[in-house]
Amino acid sequence: MPSTVARLLTPTYATILNTHLVHPAESIVVKPNELKSALVRPLQIARYEPHRSERYLAASLAYGMVKNHPFMDGNKRTGFLLGHMYLRAQGFPGLVTQDEDVTRIVDLFVGVADGSLGLEELSKMLERHP
Image (cartoon, rainbow, N blue to C red):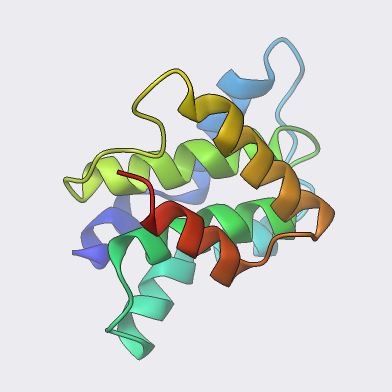
């Protein structure tokens, strides 16, 4: 199933999503190869580490988007939303299901961006999410 979702989450789709998130600013892809790399992470991990959960795969997508920083602006927002959409496309609840979850998720993504939270930690936090 990760391959089905990977076909949906293309660089073009991610750029359109980023455009909506940074509006009225312009969406600018500054690292196109890093964008592609972040988007294929779940597919690669599912292939070579088949024991990984869907939440781990979503975390890897979001983490890659934040750390690779392919856009001029909005990388955390885009990473969060792509991870959320990945889970929803797989039939799982998204990353946020209640209002109080928003602050916790924002803190997680800021932690990824500043280097205080790695992929394993992000994945564990998302695994505990209902």
